[in-house]
Structures are given as structure tokens and as C-alpha cells.
Image 1 (cartoon, rainbow, N blue to C red):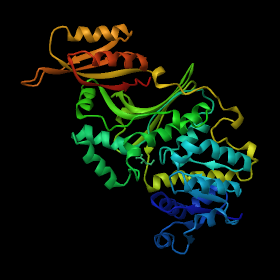
Image 2 (image 1 turned 90 degrees about the horizontal axis):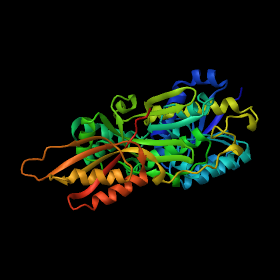
Image 3 (image 1 turned 45 degrees about the vertical axis):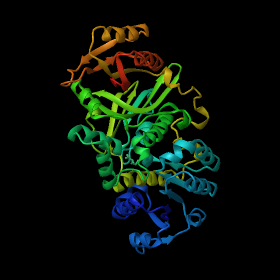
Image 4 (image 1 turned 135 degrees about the vertical axis):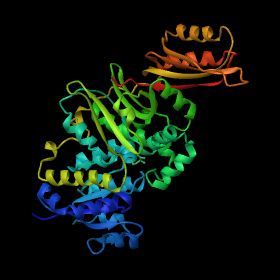
Length: 436
Ligand code: HSE
């Protein structure tokens, strides 16, 4: 059978990994796909570098538009990133009747609804396994493997950079800035590391996974996004003493009134498997009503792990080329006309438990005042620790863990407690999830 011709847009880390894996495993891949899959043209601004990578195996051009307009190309692989040029190119490829494979989580989280609608109209597929969790086949698992289930919640460590930073801060007592520099040196941080450390990259990924889990449109703008930049060594240590580890989690939950969609640092019991996912690794925990909990673990970034997902998409597209568009696996797991319009809940309605750290004067009645305010809001305390004052200091740290409550109640309690004259500074509040 005629080989599938692929046009590759961008041959950076993931692009060169994809080229290498396709060449190295070409025989196995053809046996699986039923025909050869070959990258025949590569578009990259740095044509000399691109040519050095591909040798004479593919044509190189600086003009990505030429590739998406090339009638010989069956599938366009978009590995440029960002959401301006890449959006135009993806939409143009779709309009030209080409299938698209992309690793671009930002593009899909922000413009996925428009892109999938265009793909549906033109009878083509947009595949995006590499957009979430690098080499972990999480999209396929959610969309196909768990298709029998009503998914109740999903929680994932989906940003390797921030997980690496938290792991190093905990294990070595290292400072945030030093570990961030190390992550950048190792090459897994995004070009703009604020997307990693401020939770934006994780929010792109949980937005995509939530859409597939629940059959809802992409709603990145409604996600609550909080990163790891405000975490201190004290909180990491106190959490550890109480039997918890702090992870940056992307969380999406089904509730009766709608869906929770949030990214924030989270205390997780250390005995949970996912709490022990360290370094640059990713893991996603999913709760389905039939299967119970399943967890998916692996490299969330890197040239060949991400290429593994890109090539899997290429094989998938190659296999379904002969299927009618209406008989293909839908982009978001649910049929496009069956998406739910149940809302994403505002953060005030989110239900979780909390770790609170307060710096207080070590005097009679202080604790009584604080617990009274919590009781007024109906917030029950699960654990409470008062640390010894440091020599010569009159202030002490109090750490409290609460039972489940609503975010708006804890917000109100924090406002009132911060108003007490015996409290110094702001209260640190970190959400907790038992993940049971
Ligand atoms: N910058 C991302 C991370 C990798 O640190 O996980 C690609 O999604």
C-alpha cells in the first residue's frame, strides 16, 4: 500500500525525537499501521539544522504554509507550539482536508472547540495524545479504555518541571530559584517557565482531560490556576511531619451542580502512590464508577517519550483513514452533538479540606478565638499542631488541617482570623485531597 506522507512542522526536541523513532522503528510501525509512515517534508525556520537532522530522508523548507498546502501530504504534525501561527496552520491544514497530529496543549485548551468543529466539518481527525502527559497514553486510556465508565474525578501530576522543583525542595531542602534553574538547564521547562511554575501548563492539560472525561467543551478560561511559587520550605516540612506531601495537582471532579476544574498545590497523604511520584515524572489518577481507581505513570516530557505519543497518533490516523468520519473515535470521547453544558463551578463552591498555617502570638485565648471563627463557619478541625517558639521569639506557627468544607467558608474564616490582632502576616492556605 502507498506510504503515508507526513509533513512535520517544527523539528525541535520533540520533532527530532519523532523523526528518529519513526526511522528506527519503521519496520515495526509499518507492520502495525498496515503501511509505511514517512516524514517526507519538514518545515523549520532553521533549515540548516533541520537538514542536518533529516539528511536526505526528507525535504526541508522554511515555509510551513507550503507544507499544509502540499497535496502530497496526508498528515500534518504540528510541533511549533504557541497559539497564533500554529492555530492558522492547523486550521489551514484542516481546510485542505489533512489530518493533524499535535502536541500543542495550549492551542487545544484555548482553541480546541473551534479546531474540532473545523475538523468535523472537513471530515478529518485532530489527534493529540502528546499534548498531555508526554509519553503516557492517557488520552487513549480516557477516551477508549475507560469508555464504559462514568468518570467521577481525575487528578494528575502533569507538569514535570514543577514536580521536579517540589521533589528537590523536599529532598534536598533546596531553594525554589536554584531548582528552577536546574530544571531549565536539564531542558524540560517550557520556553517561558512561568507556564510551568504558575500552573498554566498543568491547567491546559487538565482542561483537555476534563473535556474527555466528562464530555464537556474545552473551558480553560474557567479553570482555577495557582502555581507553586509561594510554597515555602516550612510548608513542605510541616506537611511531611503530618504525613502529607505537596504536589501541584490538576483536578477535575463531577459534582451535582457542575464540574470542578482547578490546578493548585495540594497536600496528598504520603501513603498514596501518586504522592510518591517524584522528579520530572507525571502520573494521572482516574476514578471511574465501574473500574474504580486506575493510575497512569511515565515520562511527561522529553524527546522520545513525547515522540512515542506522536507516532502512536500517526499510526491511529493511518489505521482509520478508510473509516467514515462518523465511525471514528470522537475527539472528546463523546459524540460532538452530545457534549454537556453543565457549568464549571466557581471556586467558592469547590469542596475540599485545607492545611492552614498561621503565625500567632503565644498567649492565652488565641487558639480559642481562632477555633471560634472556624466553628462559626461550620468548619471542623481534623488536626492541630502548635510548634515550639524559636529561642527569643514570642510568635509561634500553628498548623491546622480541616475536614471537608467549601472554599467560600474557608475564605470567610481566613478573612476574619487575619483581622485578629494576635495574628501576624497572612495565613497560608493549601488545599488537601485524600484521593479516595
Ligand atoms: N514543560 C512541560 C513539563 C513538558 O514540565 O511537564 C511538556 O508538556
